[in-house]
Image (cartoon, rainbow, N blue to C red; front, side):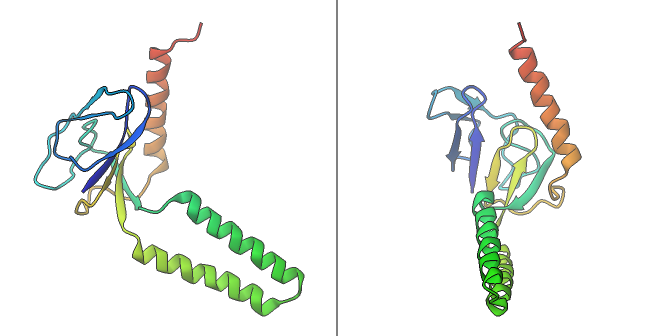
Length: 155
């Protein structure tokens, strides 16, 4: 089990395997990130950092790498199409779909907290945590913006 925490003091993203601790020292600013929820026998009913119970599940795959694969496949298929190599064009497009499907089944899931963006890997799935919901994400984005406006008021 592993957690990726964003430090609320300096904004540094750091990783820890000490998921059952009550606080985690930030390696950049050395300030402790205090947990709000206690560990419960390996399950993840709520975020251990901020105590929020609204979380979502996503594939544990770098989005940039996925987009890079998609753009390269599209660009290569365009080149082949320009040269009128239709078979190669379709081979690249179908190959990218097959590669995407294989990656989808091979890559595991991670759970992400809407409020603090802490990422949890290796926890058993919780049926209460569904896929990403834009409305819920926007609610917490607005909350973060209000908090920043209070902490750093405009002159």
